[in-house]
Length: 254
Image 1 (cartoon, rainbow, N blue to C red):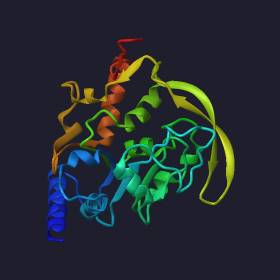
Image 2: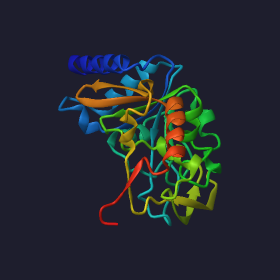
Image 3: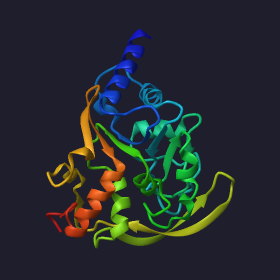
Image 4: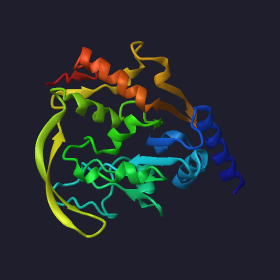
């Protein structure tokens, strides 16, 4: 127990050093394995985040399910996510709420969840105007990339959707959805495409972007970035208007 307690204290200290504080709203992407060879379990990580942000804070994690067969997708507590061990544990954790979306749902705990999730079912794209990924861009929120590099930052898609670059969208698909109230319906969504392109979201480290955009350091052994969501929106929109293909590069085999 002492080892667990000391590890949790170290995680909290590392998060605070990166600027995460009481009352923060966090969207956390993660690689559990990157934290290192410690006696860890997902609850230690989740509870460390929750203790750091306190009761006034809100913890969000993607619960993406885009790998599911569209004919079989039902948004219920039984629909697994496909983005790693930590968000999947968080999805199943007591008290966690999940937004309604067949491919790009978000799980969360905290006072901001109700407002951030309340309209997500109205979207018809992965990261549209009602998505939590879009909504956090307009509030004082932070995006945490815990040991997973800057590449899988889903919030970047929400910014891209505001511009509509030529690589972004794919085909339309019908998804079957079951709400938490038991309502069942089928809805058409436009998917993301990226045909012929690789995403290059680590380019926010370019000297073009303001230093205030993110901080970086370590949480245990995991290289971690903490991104200011409002600054990200402003800086990325500006760059996309200047160079619409800045955050992608053509695949070598395309």
